[in-house]
Length: 443
Image 1 (cartoon, rainbow, N blue to C red):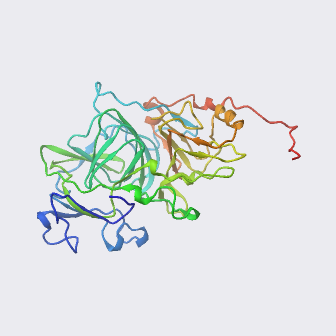
Image 2 (image 1 turned 180 degrees about the vertical axis):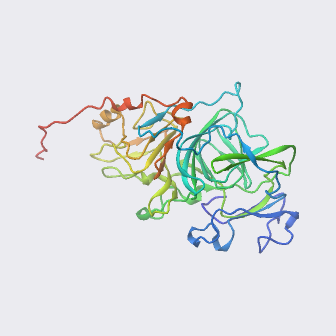
Image 3 (image 1 turned 90 degrees about the vertical axis):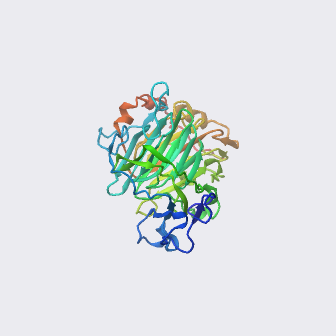
């Protein structure tokens, strides 16, 4: 089903009429199902901010057994997943990572949850205000276990390998150059078909939404109709050996056992759903005269803070487009920013760092840390003929931008062994072009 934030309803065609008519919680549900609500916002939020449109709850499930039927949660190993932002001393340097290693199946089998590694973040899950950036590297499917995040929303960016994601709402196939969002509390399991790698932006206390378009008007950036939501699908499966539900709660992992599949939702309705989006559908707005427009014109999704115009996190992409600006240095300019910028590369070659910035790697430029094109990029583009040209053809780079000052984890700085300690050298060859005898042209 297509649309962003729509009021959807869906039922598995094997059980026609499974959605109750005229109410959410009848005394007896069709087919003997249980009614269960999943709420994504406070009940008393102002209506424009409330995921309970028209006084309807966020989501009603009609399921074979309710989610409450499980053994107690107990602490589970969390590996490299963390919310400890004081593990190491702060580091304001420009940081770049080489492609993160995907474990070989012949050495160890690692599924999506076991393959989660936290790179950096800030804030606090208890106060519901913060952000984390993770990478996942895995090689095998989740077997009789699922995951849900009680702390916040996951925006998942596959870089290598497709993800078949089974949710309580139905199934989604998410391929590289697509993204998906699994919102707070939603249970899901991930199947993979080989070596798999990607990035995750996690936000606490806010949900992703489409950015305000302002003077752009009604058309541009990510079109609401291009977001896709799964249709209802259920399995009525008993698991005598035990099905494990893994819960991320206050930055730690907990596990409980039950004897049935959690994907037993026959029908559902509401507007609080998982969804996916194909980045190729992004309608680029760009400069057609001179200079640069701010990268906010490339924003796909935003998670707003309580301060107007300031985001907890923005998801920004740099897709193929035309460059036509006259009298302009066209690649990104040198800058320092009041936001933290994490960049990743799904495919291709990023125009400002064509050599060292590789697919499956990343970079972090912290608040007020200077950065910009490397020396080769500057020299080449300072003398290039300014003809109309295709920029970033065959490339998809992205940025997680945040108003939070992010701390890098020990795994990101040391354990992963992927930090490119020579990164600073890409600017070492910048030379002075200053000419005190230069004078403006008389023309």
